[in-house]
Length: 317
Image (cartoon, rainbow, N blue to C red; front, side, top):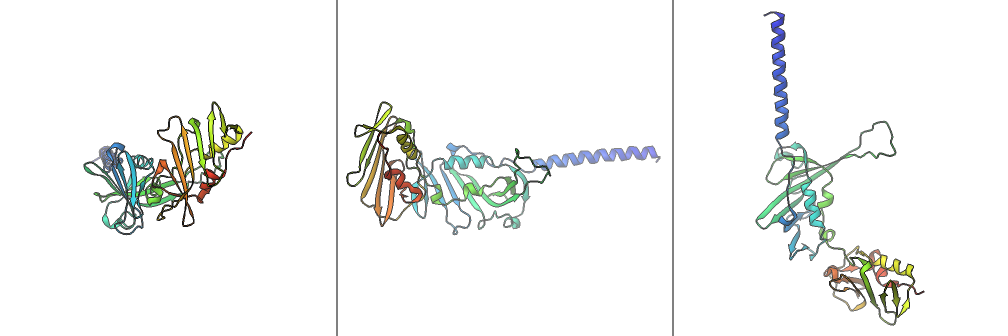
Protein backbone atom coordinates (compact mmCIF):
# COMPACT_ATOMS: atom_id res chain seq x y z
CA UNK A 1 0.00 0.00 0.00
CA UNK A 2 1.46 3.35 -0.97
CA UNK A 3 1.55 6.51 1.13
CA UNK A 4 -1.61 7.88 -0.47
CA UNK A 5 -3.54 4.78 0.43
CA UNK A 6 -2.27 4.89 4.01
CA UNK A 7 -3.36 8.52 4.38
CA UNK A 8 -6.83 7.74 3.04
CA UNK A 9 -7.19 4.79 5.42
CA UNK A 10 -5.98 6.93 8.34
CA UNK A 11 -8.46 9.67 7.45
CA UNK A 12 -11.34 7.18 7.33
CA UNK A 13 -10.35 5.79 10.74
CA UNK A 14 -10.17 9.28 12.27
CA UNK A 15 -13.61 10.13 10.86
CA UNK A 16 -15.04 6.92 12.33
CA UNK A 17 -13.43 7.71 15.70
CA UNK A 18 -14.95 11.22 15.73
CA UNK A 19 -18.42 9.86 14.92
CA UNK A 20 -18.14 7.26 17.69
CA UNK A 21 -16.97 9.86 20.25
CA UNK A 22 -19.83 12.22 19.36
CA UNK A 23 -22.32 9.36 19.57
CA UNK A 24 -20.94 8.25 22.96
CA UNK A 25 -21.11 11.82 24.23
CA UNK A 26 -24.74 12.15 23.19
CA UNK A 27 -25.54 8.78 24.73
CA UNK A 28 -23.88 9.82 27.98
CA UNK A 29 -25.85 13.07 28.02
CA UNK A 30 -29.04 11.08 27.62
CA UNK A 31 -28.06 8.39 30.11
CA UNK A 32 -29.57 10.22 33.10
CA UNK A 33 -32.60 12.41 33.51
CA UNK A 34 -31.85 15.98 34.47
CA UNK A 35 -35.32 17.01 35.65
CA UNK A 36 -35.84 14.69 38.59
CA UNK A 37 -39.19 15.86 39.95
CA UNK A 38 -42.38 17.34 38.56
CA UNK A 39 -45.14 18.25 41.04
CA UNK A 40 -48.18 20.49 41.18
CA UNK A 41 -49.16 22.10 44.49
CA UNK A 42 -52.73 20.83 44.13
CA UNK A 43 -51.47 17.26 43.79
CA UNK A 44 -49.90 17.21 47.26
CA UNK A 45 -51.87 16.75 50.46
CA UNK A 46 -49.11 15.47 52.73
CA UNK A 47 -45.35 15.85 53.12
CA UNK A 48 -43.29 13.76 55.51
CA UNK A 49 -39.84 15.01 56.52
CA UNK A 50 -37.32 12.71 58.18
CA UNK A 51 -34.77 15.23 59.50
CA UNK A 52 -31.10 14.44 59.37
CA UNK A 53 -29.89 13.04 62.69
CA UNK A 54 -33.39 12.42 64.05
CA UNK A 55 -34.21 9.20 65.88
CA UNK A 56 -34.97 6.23 63.65
CA UNK A 57 -38.56 6.39 62.46
CA UNK A 58 -39.02 9.93 63.73
CA UNK A 59 -40.52 12.32 61.22
CA UNK A 60 -42.48 15.57 60.85
CA UNK A 61 -45.73 15.63 58.87
CA UNK A 62 -47.28 18.50 56.96
CA UNK A 63 -50.90 17.60 56.29
CA UNK A 64 -53.59 19.52 54.43
CA UNK A 65 -57.01 19.63 56.07
CA UNK A 66 -59.82 21.88 54.79
CA UNK A 67 -57.35 23.94 52.73
CA UNK A 68 -55.17 24.61 55.79
CA UNK A 69 -51.76 23.06 56.32
CA UNK A 70 -51.02 21.61 59.76
CA UNK A 71 -47.67 20.40 61.04
CA UNK A 72 -47.42 17.45 63.39
CA UNK A 73 -44.65 15.86 65.41
CA UNK A 74 -43.75 14.76 68.91
CA UNK A 75 -44.77 18.18 70.30
CA UNK A 76 -48.29 17.95 68.89
CA UNK A 77 -50.22 19.35 65.92
CA UNK A 78 -50.17 23.05 65.05
CA UNK A 79 -51.11 25.43 62.28
CA UNK A 80 -48.22 25.49 59.80
CA UNK A 81 -46.74 28.41 57.92
CA UNK A 82 -48.98 28.30 54.84
CA UNK A 83 -46.09 29.27 52.53
CA UNK A 84 -43.88 26.34 53.53
CA UNK A 85 -45.39 23.64 51.32
CA UNK A 86 -45.65 25.72 48.10
CA UNK A 87 -42.04 26.81 48.63
CA UNK A 88 -40.93 23.22 49.16
CA UNK A 89 -42.72 22.01 46.04
CA UNK A 90 -41.19 24.83 44.02
CA UNK A 91 -37.70 23.90 45.21
CA UNK A 92 -38.28 20.21 44.49
CA UNK A 93 -39.35 21.08 40.94
CA UNK A 94 -36.23 23.19 40.49
CA UNK A 95 -33.90 20.28 41.28
CA UNK A 96 -31.89 19.66 38.13
CA UNK A 97 -29.24 16.96 37.94
CA UNK A 98 -25.89 18.27 36.74
CA UNK A 99 -24.19 14.88 36.73
CA UNK A 100 -24.30 11.39 38.17
CA UNK A 101 -21.92 11.28 41.13
CA UNK A 102 -22.33 7.57 41.87
CA UNK A 103 -24.41 4.61 40.77
CA UNK A 104 -23.69 1.94 43.38
CA UNK A 105 -25.35 1.35 46.75
CA UNK A 106 -22.04 1.05 48.56
CA UNK A 107 -21.36 4.72 47.67
CA UNK A 108 -24.56 6.09 49.23
CA UNK A 109 -22.93 6.68 52.62
CA UNK A 110 -20.10 8.65 51.00
CA UNK A 111 -22.64 11.12 49.63
CA UNK A 112 -24.88 10.87 52.73
CA UNK A 113 -27.97 9.71 50.84
CA UNK A 114 -28.73 6.65 52.97
CA UNK A 115 -31.33 6.41 55.74
CA UNK A 116 -29.08 7.42 58.64
CA UNK A 117 -27.25 10.41 57.11
CA UNK A 118 -29.77 12.12 54.85
CA UNK A 119 -32.83 14.32 55.11
CA UNK A 120 -35.63 12.31 53.54
CA UNK A 121 -38.67 14.03 52.00
CA UNK A 122 -41.79 12.10 50.97
CA UNK A 123 -44.65 13.87 49.17
CA UNK A 124 -48.03 12.15 48.93
CA UNK A 125 -51.28 12.74 47.08
CA UNK A 126 -54.72 11.18 46.98
CA UNK A 127 -53.42 8.13 45.12
CA UNK A 128 -50.35 7.60 47.25
CA UNK A 129 -46.68 8.47 47.08
CA UNK A 130 -45.60 11.09 44.55
CA UNK A 131 -41.96 11.72 45.49
CA UNK A 132 -39.47 10.08 47.84
CA UNK A 133 -36.08 11.77 47.83
CA UNK A 134 -32.97 11.60 50.02
CA UNK A 135 -31.12 14.90 50.41
CA UNK A 136 -27.51 14.32 51.36
CA UNK A 137 -24.07 15.84 51.46
CA UNK A 138 -23.48 19.51 50.74
CA UNK A 139 -20.27 20.89 49.30
CA UNK A 140 -19.09 24.39 48.52
CA UNK A 141 -16.45 25.37 46.00
CA UNK A 142 -14.78 28.75 46.35
CA UNK A 143 -15.08 31.06 43.32
CA UNK A 144 -12.16 30.90 40.93
CA UNK A 145 -9.57 33.63 41.42
CA UNK A 146 -9.48 35.51 38.14
CA UNK A 147 -6.79 37.87 39.38
CA UNK A 148 -8.88 40.96 38.58
CA UNK A 149 -10.95 42.60 41.32
CA UNK A 150 -14.23 44.10 40.24
CA UNK A 151 -16.06 45.91 43.08
CA UNK A 152 -19.29 45.95 41.04
CA UNK A 153 -19.38 42.22 40.44
CA UNK A 154 -19.49 39.86 43.40
CA UNK A 155 -18.08 36.46 42.66
CA UNK A 156 -20.11 33.50 43.86
CA UNK A 157 -18.92 30.04 44.71
CA UNK A 158 -20.49 26.77 43.62
CA UNK A 159 -22.96 25.08 46.00
CA UNK A 160 -23.71 21.41 45.36
CA UNK A 161 -26.09 19.02 47.09
CA UNK A 162 -26.16 15.27 46.46
CA UNK A 163 -29.57 13.61 46.20
CA UNK A 164 -31.06 10.20 45.47
CA UNK A 165 -34.56 9.13 44.52
CA UNK A 166 -35.70 6.22 46.68
CA UNK A 167 -36.31 3.77 43.85
CA UNK A 168 -33.02 4.52 42.09
CA UNK A 169 -29.43 3.64 42.87
CA UNK A 170 -27.96 6.74 41.18
CA UNK A 171 -26.69 9.66 43.26
CA UNK A 172 -27.11 13.01 41.49
CA UNK A 173 -25.18 16.23 42.00
CA UNK A 174 -27.56 19.20 41.92
CA UNK A 175 -27.08 22.91 42.36
CA UNK A 176 -27.96 24.62 45.65
CA UNK A 177 -28.16 24.07 49.40
CA UNK A 178 -31.33 22.00 49.80
CA UNK A 179 -30.95 20.98 53.45
CA UNK A 180 -31.65 24.54 54.56
CA UNK A 181 -35.17 24.27 53.11
CA UNK A 182 -36.06 20.74 54.18
CA UNK A 183 -34.10 19.73 57.28
CA UNK A 184 -36.57 21.34 59.70
CA UNK A 185 -38.32 20.42 62.93
CA UNK A 186 -41.91 21.16 63.96
CA UNK A 187 -41.19 24.61 65.42
CA UNK A 188 -39.44 25.75 62.23
CA UNK A 189 -42.53 24.85 60.21
CA UNK A 190 -45.16 26.40 62.48
CA UNK A 191 -47.01 29.61 61.71
CA UNK A 192 -45.50 32.64 63.48
CA UNK A 193 -48.32 35.05 62.64
CA UNK A 194 -49.64 37.30 65.40
CA UNK A 195 -51.08 40.10 63.26
CA UNK A 196 -51.29 40.29 59.47
CA UNK A 197 -53.28 42.13 56.83
CA UNK A 198 -53.52 45.68 55.56
CA UNK A 199 -53.26 47.96 58.59
CA UNK A 200 -54.46 50.82 56.40
CA UNK A 201 -57.96 49.33 56.62
CA UNK A 202 -58.06 49.29 60.41
CA UNK A 203 -60.75 51.46 61.98
CA UNK A 204 -60.63 50.57 65.66
CA UNK A 205 -58.03 49.23 68.12
CA UNK A 206 -59.20 48.34 71.63
CA UNK A 207 -56.63 47.51 74.32
CA UNK A 208 -57.73 46.18 77.69
CA UNK A 209 -55.37 46.16 80.68
CA UNK A 210 -55.89 45.45 84.36
CA UNK A 211 -56.63 48.70 86.18
CA UNK A 212 -57.42 51.96 84.43
CA UNK A 213 -54.88 52.01 81.57
CA UNK A 214 -57.18 50.51 78.92
CA UNK A 215 -57.98 52.60 75.84
CA UNK A 216 -59.92 52.54 72.59
CA UNK A 217 -58.44 54.18 69.50
CA UNK A 218 -60.91 54.87 66.68
CA UNK A 219 -60.46 56.29 63.21
CA UNK A 220 -62.62 59.26 62.31
CA UNK A 221 -62.06 60.08 58.65
CA UNK A 222 -58.27 60.32 58.37
CA UNK A 223 -57.75 61.09 62.05
CA UNK A 224 -57.27 58.66 64.91
CA UNK A 225 -58.77 59.58 68.27
CA UNK A 226 -58.52 58.17 71.80
CA UNK A 227 -61.44 58.93 74.11
CA UNK A 228 -62.54 61.51 71.53
CA UNK A 229 -59.17 63.28 71.70
CA UNK A 230 -56.98 63.56 68.58
CA UNK A 231 -53.80 61.49 68.47
CA UNK A 232 -50.45 62.72 67.25
CA UNK A 233 -50.29 61.47 63.64
CA UNK A 234 -46.59 60.53 63.76
CA UNK A 235 -47.18 58.56 66.96
CA UNK A 236 -50.08 56.68 65.35
CA UNK A 237 -48.01 55.82 62.27
CA UNK A 238 -45.25 54.37 64.46
CA UNK A 239 -47.75 52.47 66.61
CA UNK A 240 -49.55 50.93 63.63
CA UNK A 241 -46.26 50.13 61.90
CA UNK A 242 -45.03 48.21 64.96
CA UNK A 243 -48.22 46.16 65.00
CA UNK A 244 -48.58 45.45 61.30
CA UNK A 245 -47.31 42.02 60.18
CA UNK A 246 -46.25 41.20 63.74
CA UNK A 247 -44.73 37.73 64.20
CA UNK A 248 -43.68 35.72 67.21
CA UNK A 249 -40.16 34.42 67.65
CA UNK A 250 -40.49 31.65 70.25
CA UNK A 251 -43.26 29.29 71.26
CA UNK A 252 -44.43 28.16 74.68
CA UNK A 253 -46.19 24.88 75.25
CA UNK A 254 -47.15 22.51 77.98
CA UNK A 255 -48.55 25.41 80.01
CA UNK A 256 -52.04 25.46 81.43
CA UNK A 257 -54.08 28.41 80.15
CA UNK A 258 -53.75 31.21 82.67
CA UNK A 259 -56.13 34.05 83.32
CA UNK A 260 -56.22 36.56 80.48
CA UNK A 261 -54.56 39.74 81.77
CA UNK A 262 -54.30 41.80 78.59
CA UNK A 263 -56.18 41.74 75.30
CA UNK A 264 -56.22 43.62 72.02
CA UNK A 265 -59.07 43.69 69.51
CA UNK A 266 -58.50 45.08 66.01
CA UNK A 267 -61.46 45.89 63.77
CA UNK A 268 -61.49 47.20 60.25
CA UNK A 269 -62.73 47.00 56.69
CA UNK A 270 -62.04 43.77 54.86
CA UNK A 271 -61.58 41.69 58.01
CA UNK A 272 -63.75 38.59 58.10
CA UNK A 273 -63.68 38.87 61.90
CA UNK A 274 -61.93 41.13 64.42
CA UNK A 275 -58.36 40.14 65.27
CA UNK A 276 -58.30 39.12 68.93
CA UNK A 277 -54.99 38.83 70.80
CA UNK A 278 -54.72 37.73 74.43
CA UNK A 279 -51.86 37.71 76.92
CA UNK A 280 -51.92 35.61 80.06
CA UNK A 281 -49.39 34.70 82.72
CA UNK A 282 -48.72 31.00 83.13
CA UNK A 283 -45.97 29.74 85.43
CA UNK A 284 -44.23 33.09 85.13
CA UNK A 285 -44.34 33.11 81.33
CA UNK A 286 -46.16 35.65 79.17
CA UNK A 287 -48.30 33.49 76.87
CA UNK A 288 -49.66 35.30 73.81
CA UNK A 289 -52.18 33.89 71.35
CA UNK A 290 -53.86 35.38 68.28
CA UNK A 291 -57.23 34.51 66.76
CA UNK A 292 -55.41 34.40 63.40
CA UNK A 293 -53.23 31.54 64.62
CA UNK A 294 -55.06 29.49 67.21
CA UNK A 295 -52.94 26.85 68.89
CA UNK A 296 -49.60 28.55 68.38
CA UNK A 297 -48.83 30.29 71.67
CA UNK A 298 -45.85 32.67 71.83
CA UNK A 299 -43.51 33.72 74.58
CA UNK A 300 -44.17 37.44 74.99
CA UNK A 301 -40.73 38.08 76.46
CA UNK A 302 -38.97 36.94 73.29
CA UNK A 303 -38.44 39.59 70.63
CA UNK A 304 -40.22 42.13 72.87
CA UNK A 305 -43.53 40.78 71.58
CA UNK A 306 -45.50 41.74 74.70
CA UNK A 307 -44.02 45.25 74.74
CA UNK A 308 -44.89 45.82 71.09
CA UNK A 309 -48.48 44.80 71.73
CA UNK A 310 -49.27 46.28 75.12
CA UNK A 311 -46.59 48.56 76.57
CA UNK A 312 -47.03 51.59 74.32
CA UNK A 313 -49.93 53.64 73.04
CA UNK A 314 -50.07 56.62 70.69
CA UNK A 315 -49.65 60.03 72.28
CA UNK A 316 -52.31 62.73 72.06
CA UNK A 317 -51.85 66.05 70.35
